[in-house]
Length: 151
Image 1 (cartoon, rainbow, N blue to C red):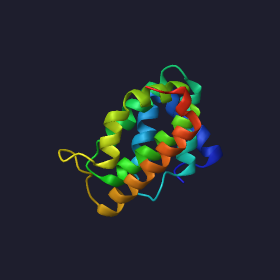
Image 2: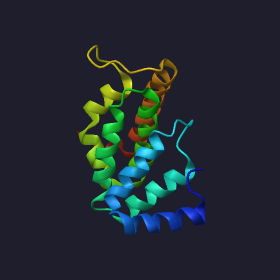
Image 3: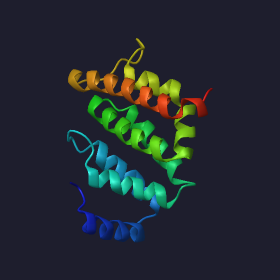
Image 4: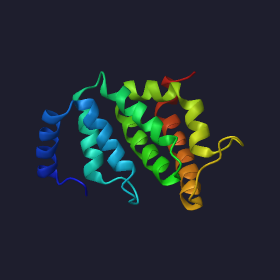
């Protein structure tokens, strides 16, 4: 993983002294979704979740803005990583959920490519996986939170 558990905590503390928490959160998300690995490393996810948990007022908004930028990336693997992190935060943060639901129309197009003007970017393997994963997470979110977040 990117950060070992004890080492990761120490690195996060040093990072917080060097930069504010919002910048650190953006950097962690950027690193996670551009690592080129299959899936987001558990250590990186833990770091992101910890940063959001530490500042439940501002961090969900920063995470949402950063993830929306990555959902617009010109590479489907990066979009898939952003969706994976969004899924984790959606299940854990009410403020993140509220913000994400407000952006759902845009996210729908960015994650499915069902718009002639905005097809999914290559590679095709990750574009297919992104579309499939989006359908799975939307179903899971609807089952868990649908009644609470009707538009």
